[in-house]
Amino acid sequence: MSDGERVTTAAVLVIGNEILSGRTQDANTNFLAKRLTELGVRLMEARVVPDIEAEIVTAVNALRGRYDYVFTTGGIGPTHDDITVDCVAAAFSVPVIVHPEAKQLLEAYYGESVNAARMRMARAPEGAELIENPVSVAPGLKLENVFVLAGIPRIMQAQFESLCHGLVGGPPLLSRALTVALPESVVAPGLGALQERFAEVEMGSYPFQRGGRFGTSLVLRSSDLELLDRAAEELEALVRGLGGEGEWSV
Image (cartoon, rainbow, N blue to C red; front, side, top):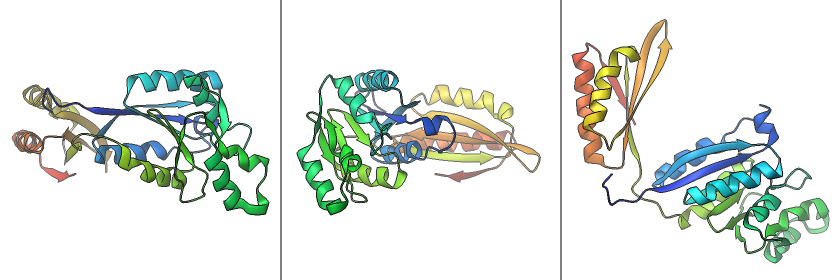
């Protein structure tokens, strides 16, 4: 990436005791990481916090000041422990209101079965914009650079697709992965030297064991395709020089 090319950054804040207890597996961070990469937005940090107001408020304020975009997931449902809306409002020092458009959407969707619990999902920090939810109507929210999304993966993904057209990213981060039947310790010295020559290409090595044999997945990342291809050529030559063979994937 050239010196004058600005990187657009993001963070994910996963909210919920069920994630920290292990009862629910977080699939949202993985989805957001992949989609943001495709849009040229670099996911720089992911945090998981419990359903504790002080923890959520502190995290929201820390992340929104550090990154271009912050995506929260979880805690915007109809129950007492869904406190994300209140916490985001507290982080911005604004009151919580019943959003008139959200109220209309929920009343139209639920009809006679609407109740106080369901109407909790019409609450929003004052000044927030709605994010469309084509799955179950209850909207996500946007307040400045913070996007408040559902915790249920199918709903969160639909909400993200509703908002992503408004994100401003840079060139997508491209990747090449070379899987080699060589231990990481064998590849490490040459990979370190290669990283010095290609400082603008991210390089990582990830060891694995299959069938009793050790191997390494070598991953290169860059938004510059030409630079990435040059680094990949040299990496392949390095592996051949070590007596190994590799299989490329993207």
